[in-house]
Image 1 (cartoon, helix red, strand yellow):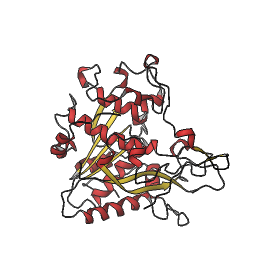
Image 2 (cartoon, helix red, strand yellow; image 1 turned 45 degrees about the vertical axis):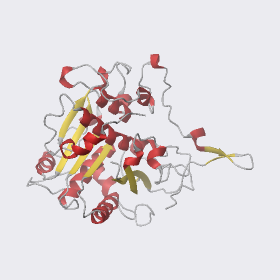
Image 3 (cartoon, helix red, strand yellow; image 1 turned 30 degrees about the vertical axis):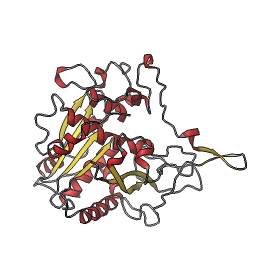
Length: 359
């Protein structure tokens, strides 16, 4: 678990920390409240990995392991009571992308052959498509866009595209909280980062945010669009994006030709960490927990590494083998108890790795 004490400061400074001034004066050195804010959204992004059923032999492969009601506590988000999940989001898994991006079940009795659980929409609790600007020809990567917009009339989960699942829920929540001051924040990692960028742009360009600011905090994002998309994004009112990039991570360099980076960049370097193996590998350079570790300790242009946020280093090995052996933390230690196997009353074991929502 990590300590995010000081959320009162974040609440008071939320406009500044969400990019009202494009994070000027906050990135180098990295402001401590901004560190906490980035890690907070990073944990919500990581939750989409931790909660995804990756066991292809399960009939629920590609679905969410846990129900909405207690999802955030089950995936060990540091402050689960800060948010209430209002909707799960699903996307087509049959689009033309490498297999690593989607989980396709092997079971003939699969919960869905067409869809993957992709994430969620949440609202803060009491405790706590491309048209902006005047660019000539904004374009986005066809693969990312297909995940966002694809539908299947025969699918229970994707009769409606991921795009309209998000937009309809945003509209519903905007109407529900129309008497309150609101903001919209979107987060994601890797493919999720690309989708977060597209979704944030879509919400603003089509007026779903009404007058409230929209911010995206993305990690390890591949490039999304061309230079006209970048100009359109960066010129849009009420739209901000902070791209967190780990220096050795190769994913943000792709695709190369014809693509540009939108938003504001925060560069970190996990190679500076005294806790992480050197030189690492492409998996650890791109890992979401390693990203949050880097945010917690980066010293910017001054170089070096010192944990400014009390974040448990054991989390670095949650899904990878990144920590030095001297810390005695086993690699990839986070697993569902008994890998989802449950012993029945008849004394036989069976796979029970799915929870149905009861609301």
